[in-house]
Length: 249
Image (cartoon, rainbow, N blue to C red; front, side):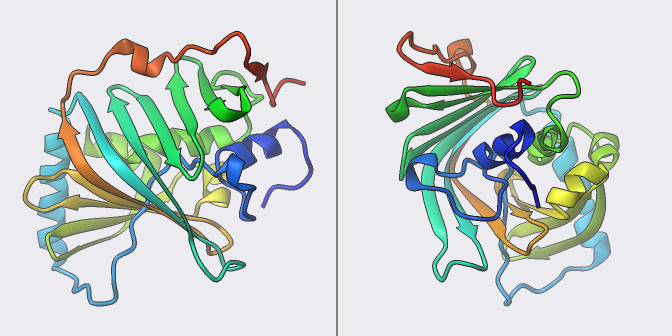
């Protein structure tokens, strides 16, 4: 998907968007979420799913903060067994995120005003990726899809995605979405979102890559509107860290 070793390509590696596996200490931190529905799923009527979608979007207007444990499962055609990581994710409207993978290797990614900060504590390394200007390249559009699970309205959802399908099974409503941005679509043709039909809480998401590989994120122990400290989204970069800007020319 991404050729060469320029800054944009390195950013893709860091964000886990490259299709080949990385060394364990550079565990791919994918900030977009995923869901795999079993073959036993039975589709509901379009009307049922549409009503649930409207109710879910309505519930989003009351969501200010959210956190949950996450299990990431990366499936690649080149690997017999999937790659699995454990961690936790935090969200604060209107667009603050922190992903922290604790196993197999500690990695932190935080969306800050104007940049994405990725920390590798064991390696004493920090990477900064700008979210302003043109230097970010296609991965910037991919990062914007981070908010797929937290749209504030149908208009906001449809401004970023085309809704390909809606289905209901076993207490979950699943949406299959296609990014409207062509650059994001080249990396991720589809994104799936699943939420509970009773509580309208985000349960899982799936990022589908152009080569057929997927990244699934299953969420557990969710907390709605918890009090979150600002420091959570402004981690300190210690003096002994090596700080790099891979996209800087």
